Amino acid sequence: MAATVQVGVSLDTPVLVEVPTYLGALAAARAADLRPVPVPTDADGLRPELLAEAFARTGARVVYAQPTYANPTGAVLAQQRRSAVLDVVAAAGAFLLEDDWARHLGIDHRTPPPLIRDDTDGHVVYLTSLSKAAAPSLRVGALVARGPAAARLTAIRTVEDLFVARPLQEVSVEILGSPTWTRHLAGLRTVLRTRRDTLVAAIRTYLPDVDLTRIPDGGLHLWLRLPPGTDDTDLTARARQRDVIIEPGRPYFITEPPATHLRLTYAAATAGQLTDGIRRLAPLL
Image 1 (spheres, one colour):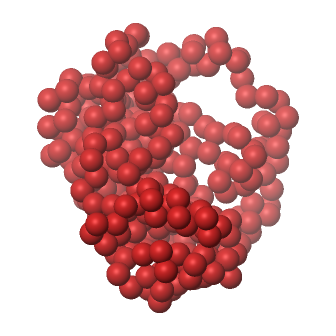
Image 2 (cartoon, rainbow, N blue to C red):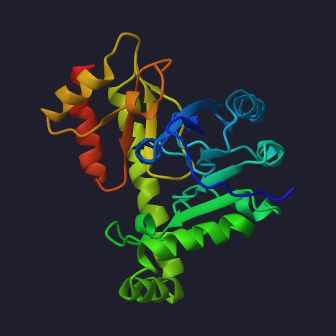
């Protein structure tokens, strides 16, 4: 069954989102007068049975998901769930907005293929970006869709700004077409592995009471569960006074979180800075 596009939303139009999820997605949904509705995840990503229940309960037509190295948890949608998730979306006559932000940020294993590869009826709208792998200031992304969704999105983009600025297009072509691109990604993988492993080692050494929920195979973040009774927002404020930048977990949830968390990033800091940051954080817990 091919998906169709409906134009216009009300102030209470629901959009399903996996939780915890990317802050920017929640902000964008609310700015568009959409109502984010949480769909719980576990270590293997979206749970198809809960996704089906959420579609049936809310009548939502869109689910936002990060199947690969989800921000903030680092989770990857399990292989055995991929087809089930797509089947649920198709049965609901809905769309899955696949945010593949970390496509080039795999560390330990080959990055799984995007869900859109297995979508034959136009139910997946795919987003990806060069910004994280090439340069944060290179604000170039890709939007891929099929059928009526592609036509509608093309029309919207034409009205808004016609096309991506030519200089950015030229830079992107040069980067992706360069023989050094593959070498750059290999070097990036090595640096990210070193930083991730350094941060993990520091946490295990200096924060023994913190639960490191997973060591992600890719992406840029670690997701930590804090000891019971810890106020993540207060901890973040006190850490900033020690020049340690961390993020509280609470804003990544739509409703009250089941536990308190922190998101730590190893994207830009050196190995020495990461270790020093955790050492400074330890007395605050």
